[in-house]
Image (tube, rainbow, N blue to C red; front, side, top):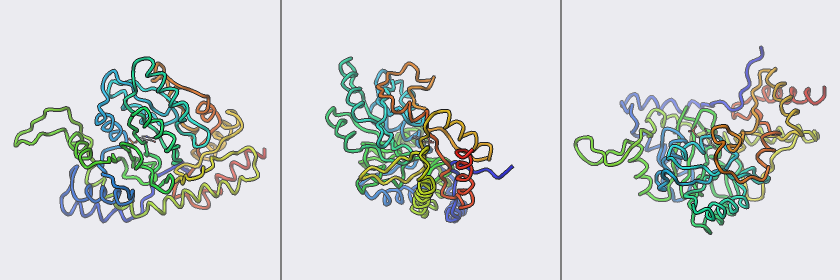
Length: 374
Ligand SMILES: Cc1ncc(COP(=O)(O)O)c(C=O)c1O
């Protein structure tokens, strides 16, 4: 069996170890400490805008806290991009609220502003104004920020920007992760930088960051004994994990450059293969190309290609199955235009890691060419 080629595997630089060693040496082995503060500072500096970062246990916990901070409760409705990973939608249900799924547009594969407005108008006509909108920069491609914000502003609904897959991406020169009323980042094992598991909540105000940290550390009131007047969570990032994050920040730009070069490589080698279509970067968008995705002509071609890659021990994955098609969300209201269904049928994510070697990329390309030439 040939060695496995992964879709997107962790890529350590070595710069992580001194931060972890320092945590051991100073006994900061806890969900607080200098690495947590340092990682938050590094992220804030990287994002450039006036923002306040809280390092958390995961991107999912950041989404959950952002819903809590926006006052989402049982019986509320929250609009969510249908074409996403389930973690975008699950925290809506943690709060006892109902997700309302909105389809994608073709230019970025993300939330369609037209469908968004249709959904809001319809929900309002039914007597429930959505409490928040969760929009996602999927695979690193920025969503139509201006158009989505325009609709959100018109109806005065806050936006939660799910930037889990898009650290390093930009929209009109500004970093993704800075556009929402709240934004979230993920450092899970497959992300552009990873801390093994981890995430962050980006707030516009220090007050909201402080509230998030309070809730993330069991909502302990100020008293010598344990005192709680609110339900809390154990969502803070550990100082060891944050040490990995500080090391990873030193290579974030090079990871973005390598992922973009993987994508350019695939585009160049398949430029004469009319079976394969790539997602272009629209004007003003800079994608970190977290995953290189292709569209094939049909589901059967997509599946045939996926199995050929699997036979060569190469991991690929169909584009994310939309939430409105997931059994767990079968009763959730949805506003559809057919785009995300088609993308799921025809789309495939190719190996995209920043640690892929030229030989590995060649193996992927050879397998794809063999499939189409047979
Ligand atoms: C779009 C999206 N949102 C949210 C998450 C959740 O992040 P985490 O795995 O850090 O909880 C992920 C990744 O896992 C994701 O891809």
